[in-house]
Image 1 (spheres, rainbow, N blue to C red):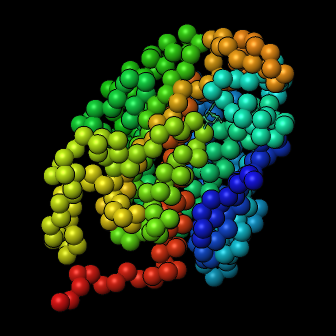
Image 2 (cartoon, helix red, strand yellow):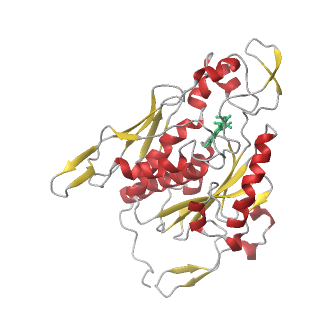
Image 3 (spheres, rainbow, N blue to C red):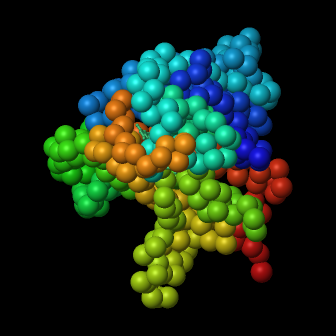
Length: 371
Ligand SMILES: Cc1cc2nc3c(=O)[nH]c(=O)nc-3n(C[C@H](O)[C@H](O)[C@H](O)COP(=O)(O)O)c2cc1C
């Protein structure tokens, strides 16, 4: 059975296809009384929007979001607030070019979801990949805009930290730089090299992968629902559900395998604020599936875009061996536009766990405990 919903208390259902009339989502479980306007959500959508630089797909979508339900103009507060009922958000598709895809109607792009959708359902919406298109990620970004409002004290930011073999130099990390360049890259020097690098990749009819890092600061200790709703497990599932993601790490991640116990255990002292102070954060802010109060740090790798101009060997839906070359408008590196999507998924998972924690435990117990 298909499944288009995630979250438990902050529940997001997305709908729509790349070349359909509209895409959107329904957010259920958002608490009432939270100020929310379309402009709040639009901020994040504008960062993910296609056609903003020559390094992303040239599809031109305004991605203007409409709030269809779940809000109310409160005369007392003189502003629009959530009502606690389902919030439906809709984004119209305006720049579909379905005929770009008629060539591949019966052909399976290697590395894309064409074969698996056809095998599972017996038909597929080949226009832009239908539901398998990353156009769906706009809905996640819209939901993330609502989630951020549920957890206003938590700051969620993401950045592209690697494209192909080119990695950021962490000593040059500057969050302001993420907003200034076309790659959401925190290292200005690397960002200046990525343009020519990606131009070369595109000119050769190819594509390239990337790594995105997402950091949430201000996360209170205690979020996460052991055993099967661990915060890290839910984050991994959320990131893995993003199109083209092939690997997820939390904290030290795969590198934990080469650390010793001494290097890996985040030592604890008492901070001046009376709270525990962790001396390192190899755990990525999560222990036992529960947030520690440190920044929550995750990373994921996206594969290179499968739709490329270089001919590849494949088969068609009738079992004939053929060669395929994918024209149309595609992202040469999907990692760029995945950055706002990463933030949205982190925000949704944290909002969900924040509400779950409030429902089960309420206020955290007073800490430190008295002897
Ligand atoms: C932001 C973003 C943009 C993407 N743009 C494209 C694209 O232009 N062309 C393409 O073939 N795949 C693109 N993808 C990847 C496909 O949607 C994805 O590879 C496909 O659905 C198969 O799913 P899988 O890679 O997760 O197995 C994009 C992914 C993301 C996250």
